[in-house]
Image (tube, rainbow, N blue to C red):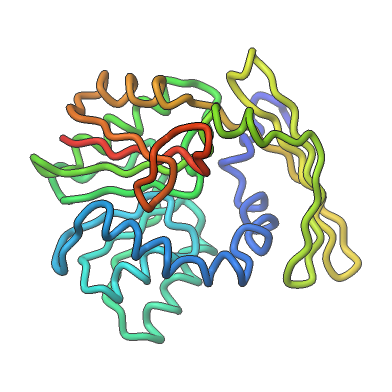
Length: 251
């Protein structure tokens, strides 16, 4: 295949289908309820609020939000994930709208009170301008006074907990992970070897790293006003004990 025509990792359905069972483990699915409870509290969400779960995956947060009476739209580029999410929503009788679209192009002007982008679903793209385009589209999609919540592993947090190699096992799957920092802590390259049922799959991907200051500045350049920074969904300080980088930007 012509290298110039090869899809990048985040554009490959095969990549997302392979890593899906390792991303959406039983433990992670069970954690969704507590995470959504904290998000609802942090953002002071009320039933009836229109919310977009951008990069919703299999809908683990979208479904929990719908159970709380919110008007939910889940957006993802991977058809397999959306099919799984729709089946779960239908089984529970939940009214969730799911949209298959790339986050770089999804935009519904002034449609949402809140947009969330969680579980490190930001910083995928080769060109930083694409990250900015995502934020600009979110800004346009928010109603006046709307809020955006982004949850990633901040550069400061990763520097504190970084391990070049580690492994984990859950649901009968063993994942060997190897990470390398490049571009002076501008990005991280990851290699996963996934072992399941006698099969071995290898996946490689990269993420752009953001500090709290860098992400806050980018949000302000995209038009957002106040930007609040937290160390987790519970609203703890973003300090040396932070577990995540959670930012809430106000339009």
